Length: 473
Ligand SMILES: Cc1ncc(COP(=O)(O)O)c(C=O)c1O
Image 1: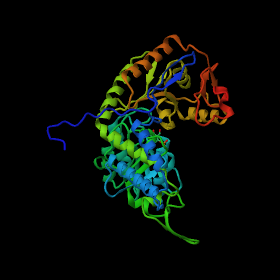
Image 2: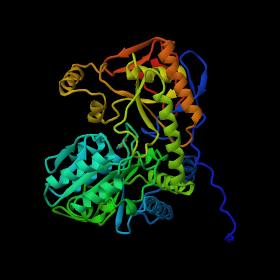
Image 3: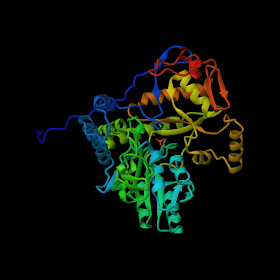
Image 4: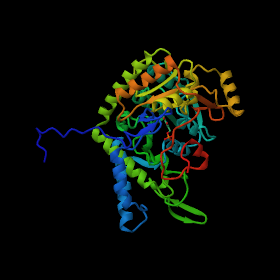
């Protein structure tokens, strides 16, 4: 037993599979991949990959199998559910439903909301927290993008005061996937509850970067994706009170969600099975549960502090680069995750992303990041211009859809990575690209011309369509 005066062993930072992977450069040679695309999806934690490897021999059907392996798999699946519950400090009355991802979670909740529910959401939301609410049974009101966290709360309060109805939901992000700004969730939840509304927290960006304590924040529902939490095996979770999810017809209908079926009746199971029809993603759940335990062991406060510091440093560095414009909704006031959206004067966003990839081995994302209304706001695109862009896309030209480049950080991102990005951007601004690039109007993507980089050998052969890009057999 550990003596009280003994300090606990220092927990090393978790490591990622493929952290040292090298990628080809268009001019020849290879270099270590600088992954700055964590906000889109993350590599697996080494611990997660090891847990998946160890579990695979035991993988089997869950819940209904009498075989020993089925029982082991069921215990692992339910253990993962427990790990997710603990990680997010869910209330004992909350249910954890495994879904595919955040999008699946918000769609599930949308399907369970009582008819006529009024949904309040800011226009800055990711489409996953915007489009599911657009359905005939719900009424959605969009609140304008606020210019400060305080303004966000004022607008929310005005909207709550101006709306009525027994059922209301405030659907709010934890952190913007474009600007990295962390939203005033606790205050928003307090406000919403004061007016009798429930709160859904879109935790997709927050989950692996910032502590989420559902009891402390007071939000009702949480939607998250494990592929953004270093467990990319196709699972996510909706966590929240059971009442809404335990009535009516389940979101997915099929085996596993029922206790008894006749030709003209169905007895649906209780939660969580009721909302997990079909064979569940057991491996994904085990991966997610392992990631939760691993992140918790290292400490989410510590992880957040490290990322916020690096993000502040990166923001200062990028803001000081001539020709680089950074986007934000508000000045300071709340923490900002390591998510930075920017443009480089004189270059189209997709061109910058292509140059960073081909010449520097840096992986970023570009475009509108599934948050089109927010990007139109940040880029000052007016309604007439938006209509014009839509017509262009309908006509098959995506080449002039506005957007930005996004660099995003996570476990393993270093100051050296930030410096490397800054040097690359400086070189682009000063000297321009060192290779030719061609725009494909149909996709809106630039690619090196000629492309010289070869795909690595992959476990599943690529189709002929991609052969021109590298692998020749
Ligand atoms: C803030 C936010 N919400 C929701 C989503 C949707 O996540 P998923 O694609 O895993 O469903 C994302 C994905 O980038 C996101 O950033």
